[in-house]
Image (cartoon, rainbow, N blue to C red; front, top):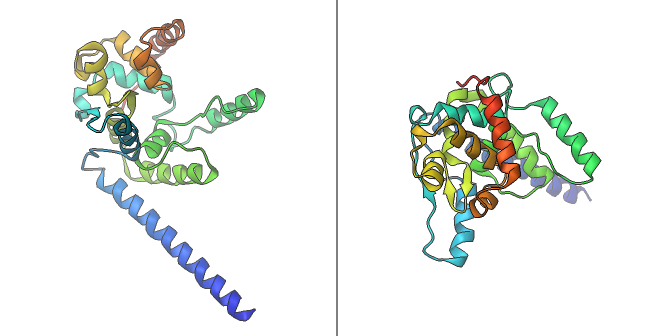
Length: 231
């Protein structure tokens, strides 16, 4: 019995050590990306794997562009649509999380998330799309890492360059070219509002380019985005 207890203790210590090493590995990447641009993410790699099951030669549409070459309209639209308190919070919008939980409880299923831009970035950079308590805990830990070392400007710069905007389409530059034949720098306010409205369901809106709901949501974002400050 004593031997079993000692063994379990060693296993526990070993597991904790592995967890700490993994967290240090994650934090190292976050620090690295303060200065260097991530060329891919866990979510991009997962989507490419899915696409290559259908077409072994499939490639993602993705081109990194610096912060100053992304339209201010798109930055405003994304903050208005996804995270109105982006400049004020420390990674978590507790009011939005509470509202999302109440809405999910009323519906009896998950219909809202309340995730901030920082949380979405944490998920896209490192994690899968599965829903589990462990993934949410890890997402929270990475969000704290990101917010503790990155400026809001850098967070938004990475976010606009790595989020999904269609079937194999990632980042603002690829999205602007894919939908409008333009560059991210010259997106109009309406185009920016439309792209922001697509974020929750990018693959669907890649197939179905117009719906009344998309038009309505784009108009709402357009109304709110001019009141948004960007980093």
